Image (cartoon, rainbow, N blue to C red; front, side, top):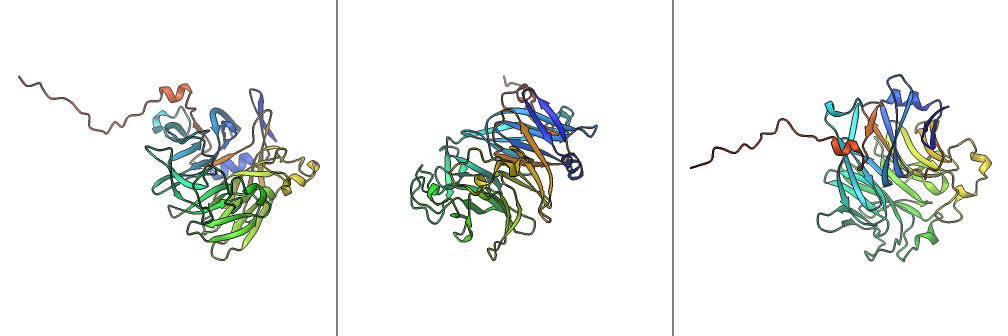
Length: 354
């Protein structure tokens, strides 16, 4: 076990984490409410952890050239700094845009060929940022009859396939205000954007992701399970189970990285994971992340926060090296890193006419 101390916080990594990061050549980013944590490996092969303040940091999405970060009422986009301005890191992500969407209950975010999309649990819809309004709804579940701020079914995630939003998870199919709370046990579904219910009998499903073979991988948070769903047949297969609430999922080749935490304050009473005795998960992180081999169901490694750190709400795997970093919107790096395209033709005024 390796532990890194950061001010009043500690992040402990099990023995499998550093070798996995090096083998996959990736950096992990975890969101815990008001902080983003960057977990990598330094040039000496040691665990390297940096912490960045980020107000309301929640669900994350890496699209290949940028990181989307949901805040309390903003959707942030962080882009790569030029290669010669990375402060010694292999990749440096700088805040580029922040779209004010308001308190719409962003539970997931993703990038499509048309741009970013977000899941609004408050308005029960899939939406895009709008240049004039807060958001522009682009999809609602087939059971929803009104676009109102009532969190009727609690939409919890979106999966992109071939550049388009393809699947969403919902805690229920309720069409009354806050009705999902009465249907949460076994009432969750995976629904395709064509309205077809792909799989049901789920308990707080969230963060669906499409795997390399077209399968949908998702968290069944209320039961502590990582699931694989065949979208053609609806067959659900359990890949991994742990007595923890799960939130935040990203895929890395045959592996899954998932946020996890002890169910000390579940969103609704009676969730199966909350019924497991504490002694049964004493060796698991009370707040942290798990790396799972999807083929074997083996736990490859775990990260555990110690100290006053909120639950993990977002996970992103950044490829291309073990030493990525990012800048906080309020930090000095974001203020002083000015990027220009040197190849752009400059406008030069001609001589003034007499």
